[in-house]
Image (cartoon, rainbow, N blue to C red; front, side, top):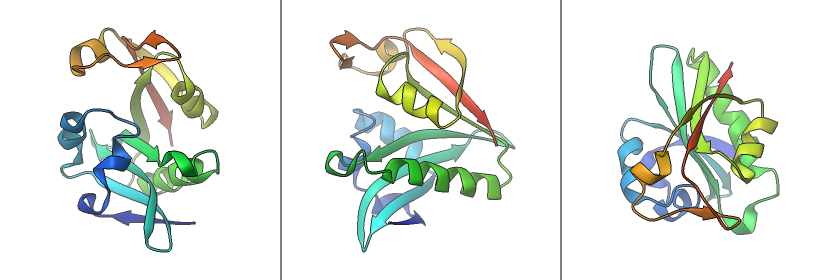
Length: 148
């Protein structure tokens, strides 16, 4: 597996939809974003989208791996690569939003992210369709952070 920085146009929207079900939200953060990809030969298997939100702070907006390639360490390798690239750009703090429960929360916490705050009604206010995981509707988001 190789990890590279790529242009946003190279990343299939179908891949990004694996982590964010809203094409409108995806379009809102792709402009001027840093895009990293996990590639096997020429095929993109995973992607991570980050963007500066302050002088020394960046936000991770999306990290996705196609379902048939999940649970193989590709996402973890991609996240480590992206964090290293952000560190090289003098980013000192990385933030992200995720659901208040579920696999994604545990994934980010295993990689060292910590809870900063709760954003009430995030999924109700920003997504036209209700999002469910394990039979529970996502309503609030957690803001997580990591100091690099």
